[in-house]
Every structure is written in C-alpha cells, then in structure tokens.
Amino acid sequence: MTAVRAARSRRHKNDLLSVYAERLGDAIRRHHSGVALRAAKVETELAYRARGAFLASMNHELRTPLNAITGFAGILRQAEEMQITPEQKNEYIDYILQSADLLLSHINTILEIADAESGGTKLSRRAVDILDVLTQTMETLEEDDAIDVTFTRDFGGELPPVDVDPDKVAIAFRHLVEFLNSDEPVSIKVSTRRGLAGESANYVYIAFDATGTEVDAKMIDESLRVFEQVHEGLYRQFDPRRLGLPIAKSYIELNKGKFSIKTKPDEGVLIRFSLPVASEEHKRAFERLAS
Image 1 (spheres, rainbow, N blue to C red):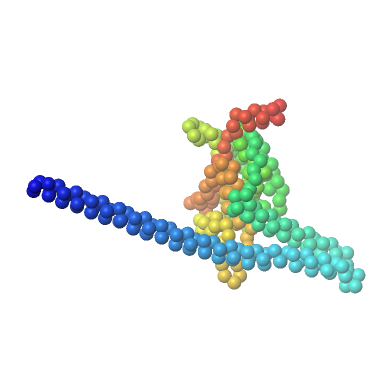
Image 2 (image 1 turned 120 degrees about the vertical axis):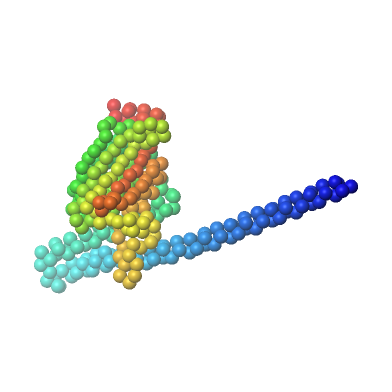
C-alpha cells in the first residue's frame, strides 16, 4: 500500500508540475503577444507621424516651383503693360522651365516612393546585358550639369545576361549616383563580376566605390527611413536625392537582388548589390534578339 500511495503521490506531483508548466507557458505567450502588439502599435503611430511630416514638407516643396511657374507666367501675360524687355522675357521663360523640371522631379520621386512602398510595382523582367544598362546610365549622368561625378570602369570581363526590369534597374542606378553626388567633385569606381561558385554563381555583383562624397553613416541611416525627414525643425528642407536611396534599394530587391551600403574609413561610401543571372529560357530569348 505504501508503494501505491508513493506512486500516486508522484503522479499527483507530476500532474501539478505539468499544469503549472502549461499555465506558465500560456502566461509567457500572452506576455510576448502583448509586447509584440504594443510594439506594432508604436511602430504604426511612428509611421503615421513620419508620413505626416513627409507630406507636410512635400506640400511646401511642390508649392514652391508651382508658385514660380504661375508667378512668372502671370508676369509674361502682362509683358506689354509692364514693358518687359526681350532679355527679361527669356529669363522668365527659363525660370518657368526650371521650375517645371523641379516640380516634375518631385512628383516622379513621390510616385516612385509610393510605388515601392505599396509593393504595387509592376516589373517587366527579361534577360538584359547589365553592362549596357550601366554604360547608358553613366553616359546620361555625365551629361547632366547637376551631377559632378567622374566614373571609372572596372568591368570584370564578359558577364551573363541578368533577369531584371532594365528600366527599374536604370532608375536605381541613377538614384544611387544622385545620392552620392556632393557639392565637391565625386569619383565613383564602378566594378562588376560574376559570383564564382555555389549560390553566388547565380548572381552578377556590382559595386559603386565612391570617394569625395559628403555622405556619412547617419545620413545613410536616416535616408533609408523613407518617410522621415533628414532635417527636422522649423527650417527643414526636402532633399529628393536622399529619398532616392530607399527607392534604389527597393527596386534592386524587387528584381530579386541584394543590396548593401556602408561608409569607408577614408570618408567614402561603398555600395554593393547583386542581380540574378537570367534563366535558361530568358537567355535563349536574349540570344535570339541579339542575333
């Protein structure tokens, strides 16, 4: 009987321990769920505030060129009454065109951000020669008076075609260069190579090694938060080139690529990203078009 009672006692203790462990596990899970819920709520509130600050700043940035356009257009409408000289007329027309370009740039940036953030970007992926995309983008940027960048090329031999949307990738390249652009001349070494073995062999790797840029780690961190302003306070200003960094990152990742950016000890910036090698089916289509 003593042995039976002892066995029952042990079973009873085990049952109590099991119940206790189960209840403790439930309590821990409820606590973790509560913490996660509160964290998600805080994150959502911060996102709404950041979006509000972004839109408030954008309101000013859109109105500024628009006011210039309407103001100078109004002056030109009364050119005879105000006795405006031909030289002044041409100058006002230049102001209107510059303001229109600035306004269009802001609108395009907003649309690209909204597109990337919503996940609604439609890609037209196909096999393309990434060296052609890189070269054409660099040639376009070298002709842009607002970009003071010198490129050096280190293309590591022949590369396989990559499976991407060339338009989105070209936009990403442009935004990266605009982000690195500074008041002083910037030098960017553009290098390419294919992965050597294993999983890396399925990717083409591209690097932008920039020197002379004024970008620092704090600016990179703040710029990657899409809807946060890099400058806070009464006199904050919208800087579309800083918004270009998260757009570029999003477009690279949407094309199944990988993206990284970091500062260098010599006050430079190194951007690395990879793009997937085209599938055999897309390669054959690429070869038919090239032949």
